[in-house]
View 1: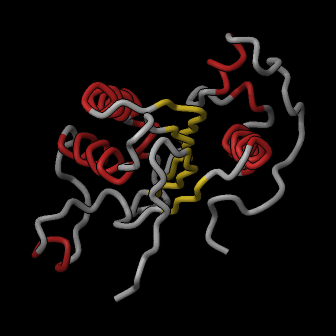
View 2: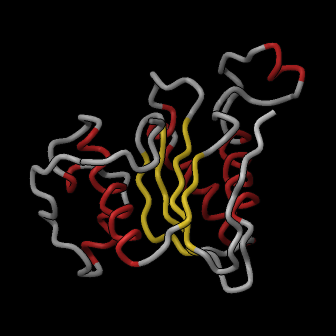
View 3: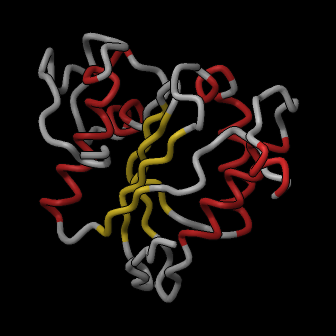
Length: 177
C-alpha cells in the first residue's frame, strides 16, 4: 500500500486537484449547483477561505487557506465529496471493490495536494486554476468559463476581465506527470 505523505500546517494554504472517476463525462458542471451547496455546507461547519477555484467537467482545482490552528483539509475535502455524492442519484458504474466497500463510483479515491510555499507559488497556482479551462480547450478566453472564482476576483478588482487574453497554460501544476 502506498505511503501518502501530506503536509499538515495549521493555517496553511494548499492547492488541490480532485478528479471524477469517469473522466470522459461532464458530471461536475452538470451538477454545479449540487457541488456549490456541498461546499457551502462544509464551509459552515469547517470554515476555510477559497483563494481560487475552477470546476471543469471532470475535475477541479482549488486553493484553500485554513484558519489559524487548523490543518485538517482532508475532512473538508471528504465532506464535500460525500455531500456531493449523496445528492446525486445512484446511476454510475461501480466496480466490485467499490460495491464491497459501499463506495460510490463518482470520484477518484485519492486527490493531489500541494502546500503553497509563498506568494509567488500561490500566484502561479491561482493563474493555473484560471487558465485551466483554456488549457483543456473548453474556452478560448479565461473570462468565458463560468465555473471559476476568476469572476469573483474580477469583481473585486484583483484581476482585469481580459486577464491572460489568449494565453496558453504552461507547466504541470496539479496534473499527473
